[in-house]
Length: 358
Image (tube, rainbow, N blue to C red; front, top):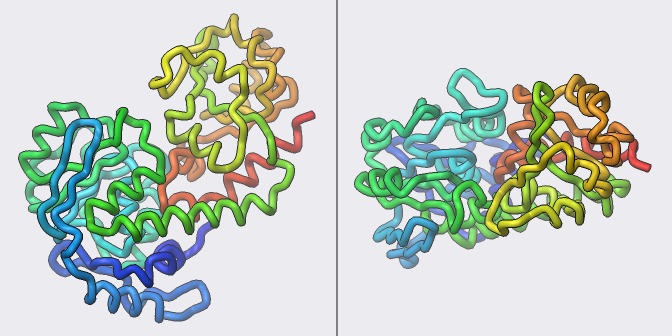
C-alpha cells in the first residue's frame, strides 16, 4: 500500500500545531508536496500551524528504562538513531539533522527503507545518514549538534546511553530493550519534541487505518498466529516471539490471537522470545498460521522433519514467509511510516495463509 505517507499522516496533526524543528535549511512539508487528491493545501497548512506553536510545554521530563531525561527547551536539531525512530519526526513533517541507516530489509543507496526514503522525498529533503550498524558513530552524531537524540525503540546499554547523553539528552526505551511498541515509539519520540498530542493523533489515525484495512479481510478474524524464527539447517531448536517483541505485539493490533500453547511456554514475562525444542513442537496444536523469515525450502524441511506434524499451520501449509530483502520482512517490525506503506500487502499475505486453514 504505497500511499503518499507525509500527506496522509499530517492530516491527523493539522489542528494541533506541529512545530517545525530541524537542521539549518531543514524541511517541513512544503508547497511541492501534494495530498492524495492532488491538493498542496495540507503542506501549507502544516507550515502555517508550525509558525504559531509556543515553547510552553518545556522543560519536559521523560522517564525510561535507563533513567530520566530532561529536555529544557524545544529541540531545533534532532538526531534519531536505531530502528524506526527516524520515522517519527518525519511523520510529523520534521527533517532530522541525522539518522541511523536501516540494518535490515530493502535499503536504498542511502541505507533507507522505502517508507523512510519516500518521506524524505515528499519533504524535499536529503538525508544525513550514519553508517552505524557496527557501532554508534559518536563523532557523526556530535557533529549534528543535536538538542535531543531519539532512541525510544533501541537496545542501548547503560554505557552507550551515558556516552550519548554527554552529547545531548537521550530518549531511551520505556522499560526493556527492544520491546518498545510502535505506539510507544511514536508517542515517546514525539513527546521529546514537545509534540505528544500530535504523536497520539498519529497513533490513533494509524490504528484507524489498520481497522479500515482489516474490514476487507473478514477471514482473518480469530485466527491464532505465531511469529517464529527457525533455521532450516538446524531445526532442533527454534524461537517464538512473545508479545513483548514489536513483531508479535503488532499481530495483536491486527486482531490476531496469541495461541494458548505459546502463552503456556512463557516462563519469564519479560522475555521477548521463547526457545523451543523441536521435541516439544507437538505441543503447538492451536497455531493456525506461522509467520517466519525464510522461503519454501524451510516449509519443505519442516514437513520432512516429522517433529512439526502436530502444528495445524504446518499440516495446512499456512505460512507467511518473509524474505529478508522484501518490504514485509522489514515492516514486520512496524513504525508509524511502515504501517501505511505495507499494511495492505501484509494483510493480503496473511489472508492467503488463512485460506489454507481448516
